[in-house]
Image (cartoon, one colour):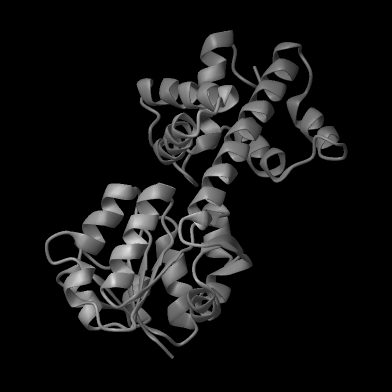
Length: 294
């Protein structure tokens, strides 16, 4: 069993850490307020800094919100790199910029570690059920070292390619998810405004070509108006910003992505930065002056 430093106990990191503890691994995290009682009962320890976490661990897993957060944890004052032992496996499961990921990988490698980018998809439900899809960018050696741990928290684990390729795949995933959420929201809004029973419309669509996990899960959220996260609007907006920044560098036009990003911005402008991303429906409802189910 491994000694793992797990940094980032948010909506998804918390259940992921729990699965690793249940599998018999020893975990230590950075002290931030009161440790979740369930994790404490399972034996998770705390250390004062990322450096101290690295000194106590053979493997580091980070699961934090954004690129600057990963950089701070790994390379900031009292960061992981200051306590990194030779041969330490560093697995970043956050969703961050692919180009910066390549730089982080080089810096960890130069310091004697092995870097793996392994962003995830599946949301809170996937994390709770250990059913995440994990997209991996790593050397063959890094992937082989990380896979037994990834198997504990995920269901579909794919070695996409070298450093940064996991993050590139995750950006592509977030484009597809965002545009599908918009499509589901527009379809249900149209049906509702036209006077149809949206629950029956969704039921019918689930049996045809329009069927998708988004329609199944987020379509139900929209109809029931349950917008507690899941996956927060502000985090999906961040991911689409990564997509659009990457598109500019590639001289690539992504008009649907830009439109979805603006709808997320409308959610934020109306106090919805912490809504579940299915809450994009609310931005469309504002434009229509109609709520689904009215």
